[in-house]
Image 1 (cartoon, rainbow, N blue to C red):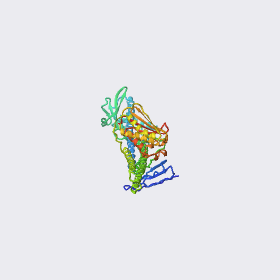
Image 2: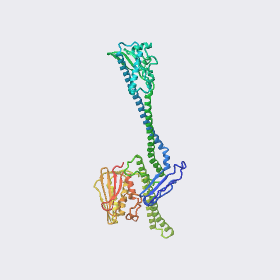
Image 3: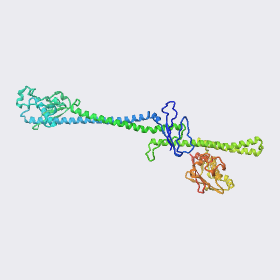
Image 4: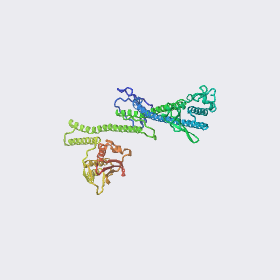
Length: 567
């Protein structure tokens, strides 16, 4: 079983760490681990086949180089988004909490003011006449409300701030006026002022107004300049006074402030926890996104250096594909395509040198024979030299034509042409050669075909290459059939023959330059191996297609489709 081998290329001049790329290579055919060092342009040896080969890039340090730029950017972006969301939610919660708590306090104070009004109405209802001095009366009402509120909050026991001996009971009402000039109890016998046990500072904000709601009777006059809420005191259905409570203006204190602080602390803890979780998730997501991009970057660099055997790891089959995984597949497809092109180029160069070597060797041998006097310098010798030169010239011309078609589209002189004339001319040219080879060339042509705009010279060369291919490889006795039909905007021309045929897996490769499928279509039949490649190039130059398929006659069928009006 193959074991992974780590590859460490030489350090890059700009960054030693960023160039250390660890590669693991598995080859499925031979079960053999392959290791190599990538320095400059390097192309892996493809001998031994390509089946099952996978090159997984584990560019550890190179990925870190990318993360320094991409991961941090993604992390900061995600964190900024989460932070903005948390800040917005926290701000909304704080604002809503403060507004709601303010409304709650407003309602609570309104309830206190209502209780104060009820106490005042009960007290005034028992009086025979309204008091002349409202200040002690208001203080008594406030004390009563404070006492009842404390009992409602703490049951029958006194509130925490009132622990100790209870205050003495108030003196009879008729004795109050004699105790002090102002009608108040002596200081030693009075309850502590309400402000000492009034964290909301309720008492000082209460002002008693006359029945008109304007004339102040008791309380601090400066409170009238601030907004507040009022309650009318009614006795026997008539308004005798108005209670006014000024709204709070200072910060919340006491129990209310403690409650808000607890809410703010809880909110801060939750927000901090959310941000911490978001930081971890943002880092994880950023790394997950950046890793395949880093691998793709390293793969692209290696492909640029000529290592076309690079393959990126792909997710398992059936997994949902993202844009990044699509990029990985595209890079793998690009590398495979470049590898095929490189292999084709190398094979083409090798075949080209071989094809040129043969006529050159023959030509050189004949020239040396003439120079050495082995053969006389007569007309037959010169004609033989001429034939070899012509063959070499045709081969060079075919290579030039094919190379031109790959670099750019073949130049075509499109002129109005009657396709029947081109087809009949091709049949007439090859009928004698077919008969001499023991073959029958049959033309199945309609009486009328629409006029077309083609390059007559190029299309004639295309038809000649197709017929030449069938003529060379069809076994005698045999049949070669040429047919044509018009299909809307295209014209379909079919050249098919009798055995031998070509295997299905080799049909498309017939159009590769210098490719020969098997011994039945080997070099012994002659030809350069470029005819079908040139034919397809001419078809594509006209906006058409040329494909190979198995023939109904048992051999090979070439199907040519050309538009009537090439664009």
